[in-house]
Length: 157
Ligand SMILES: [Zn+2]
Image (cartoon, rainbow, N blue to C red; front, side, top):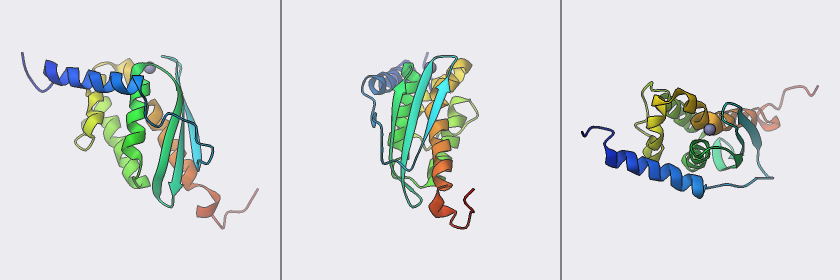
């Protein structure tokens, strides 16, 4: 039986996830980061920190560290590759697209290799694994935007 999720495609997706789990990209702390955020998924034991370095509105660098299952780690690794060089708005759009993909609400056309996580929508408990680093990335983005430079008139309390 063939279809959009043929065995061959599923195997390709599996190998992308296993490869990024074994050799995660941008897997390091970033002391010079503009912001960072922690993500914890107690259901599975996934725990990651995501660092972001902004240059104006652009994500100049992004990294992560921590431990978790293959899906959470591979998703974090592919996330760092996907958002590097993107503007804040573009990174948020990717978040929405990826979230739609893994929750089965559509989207994902612009995701490239991140489509490897499309099968996650069939396993609701795995959605948190796949989105953990993405939520941390988005909250670090918000923190970076709230930095002192962008709010010069805000009184110091
Ligand atoms: Zn997990």
